[in-house]
Each structure stands twice: as structure tokens, then as C-alpha cells.
Image (cartoon, one colour):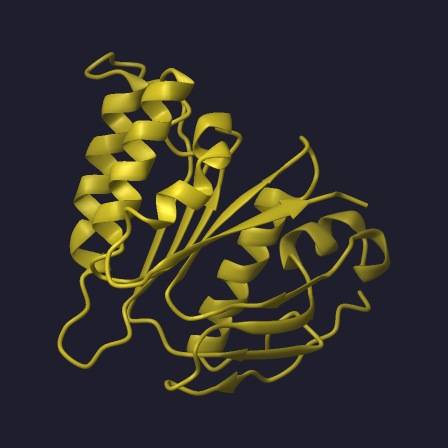
Length: 201
């Protein structure tokens, strides 16, 4: 399919992930090859949470999916769909994507989201000497008002800053995005927030 593949450079002491021409493997295969999709470059920093925004169909979810798959491949000794890929080792993987409404109506969508995330919390806490977790949140807490969603997200990010995962949060929440600089002041131990804006192709 013309998709580049490289063996990753894995180094537990690296500050973050670095990628060149990284592809969403599933999307490239579905569309017939690398020439049908846009690759991404990325240089991550230690102790930084990334808020990812942009237009609809602009590549936000594609980016975090490509990053997550590349990291899973790297940590399992596989070649990565990228021209170059270097990374640390993470001891937990957590993804949080929206689900459909509970057909049995045992709980609303927001309650379901919060319950599901709470079950994953043990994966986020590193043991002594471990590097922590790799976390992808995709449109989390969009099932309530923007104000409430922003408040929940900010509280969650503040709590997660205590355990310092590598965190990527795709969101359209204007209130959260508008206050990203102020959010940094609420995080623990010097954890920073960076805003990434996708522009599509």
C-alpha cells in the first residue's frame, strides 16, 4: 500500500514521542494506500497535556488513533506505520471514546462515561519507577452542557496531573479550549498544557 514502516527507537528515558510521517494504518488501508491520506509529524514533550481541536473532519481523531496504534506497535516489538518513530515506554494504556446511548437505560450517557473512566483509573497510576500511562480522550464529556463538560474535564486533568500520564484530549469544548492557559495554573507539579489545532488537508 506504500505505507512507510520503521522499527521504533524505544528508550525509557525519552521525554516524549517523536514521529515523522506517521500514518493512521487502518485509514490508509481502507482508502487504498498512503497516497490517499495525510501523514503527521509530532514532537512530544515531557509532562505536557495536549488539547487537540480543529474543524470537523480535520484529522483530530485520525491523529490520536495513529499515535495510539504506533505506540502499541512499538511496545510490542512491531514495525510502526511511520518514516521514523521514537518513544519512551508506557506502563498503562487508556482510551476513552464516546459510546452509544445505553439501550437498557440503566444510566445516562454522562454517567456511563464517568463510570467507564473510573474503572480505568488503576491503569493510570504508575508503580514506583514506572513511566506512567498513555491516555487518549476523544470528545469525552461532550454529553452534557459545554460549561459542565469543561468543569468536569478541568477537574479530571487536574487530578491526572498528579500521576503525569502522556495525555491527548480531542475536544470541541470552547470553554475548555478558551481557558487552556489558565488551566495550566491548576495542574500539579509543573505539568503543562499545549493546544494543537488540526487543519485538515
